[in-house]
Image (cartoon, rainbow, N blue to C red; front, side, top):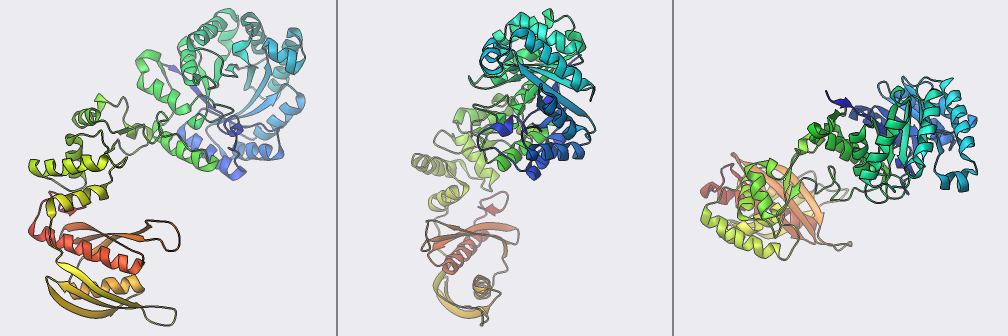
Length: 513
């Protein structure tokens, strides 16, 4: 039978202490709601004694959440504990989390207390907290650098005084996984009443070992893990929720443990926290990074196409990401290129693939990633090689606040010049209406996008359109310093490609992209 691991999320408390990660009250409530949707067991909503803003945020979160325990952090002082209780008391499931340092260096230089004074203070704080709520957590700050036997004595006293959870923090990220495993085992073996409380761990990432240490602790018998979304937190950050949860989810037979996290909400939670804190997720971040499910190497792509499990130990959909990505770059192979071309509408022959692949490799040596638009240009250049059926000879547009937008256009259609004028809701609409009239086209405009190729007010604009007609679809592109002219070029380019497809149906999905 798999053991239940309690997920204690401290994104809103320890995570917010990450430099530049401050959130306002509305943002904290929004994140808390997502964390509840994610299925975390406990949310440490803040440090109520730190400021009135923190107190208000914790209070509002406590009132809003219905399923998740809400914890308030407090030092071992009556003032802090009263503040914490005042903030969480209206929660459906309130918790007070009190702490004091137990390492010799902290006791000497920070607390100016000896061991007996620390034990006495911890007992008083836990007892007072217990008089307010049954759900009390006690943390031994800097536990990983504390004397083992003293740590056990402090935990024993805290549990005897009413603590239902005792937390062993690696506050400065000093521990090594096997060492931390041994420490957790020692605490479990040498704390006489440890069976009366949940043993928790809280690791920091100063040596990049927070997740490793946390998983080692779980393997040693810890049953609560304290984590943050995206691993944000002080200095190098905290243990990453998504890494721990997916390690347990992916390797259940090894850990014999499980959580109640809805893993499909991991990526939405990651995006939200990144959005409200302004802290971007590094591309190679495990689970939620942009490259976590992206593959460029040709060998990897070939394996992925045959069986995704060859190079993915979890499916992206499991964590809320829509799909894996085969990134086309200089390491990509012919198999991946053929597959991607099929996905965007091209079913090319072996000979055509060889032509495009050669040009693709040449382009990939010049730029990091090859986009769909790049591929479309390569196919146009290497395979289609057709003269334009429609060609723009001139365009004149009249528009303004006091006139009806009008476009006068002259086109060459298969070598024959025609001209006309038309109206629209704006200059681009008038242009498209007139071109459609001149070409007798019934093409439907599915997409219209404008982007600047350069900076400044004199930037050249690029327009992309997607057209559909009689079951065929095609992209059209045009660029010009004048955005109306660029739009006309893009529309005509799309019509030319539709015209080509009518006599050269090279795609199985009838889509030319």
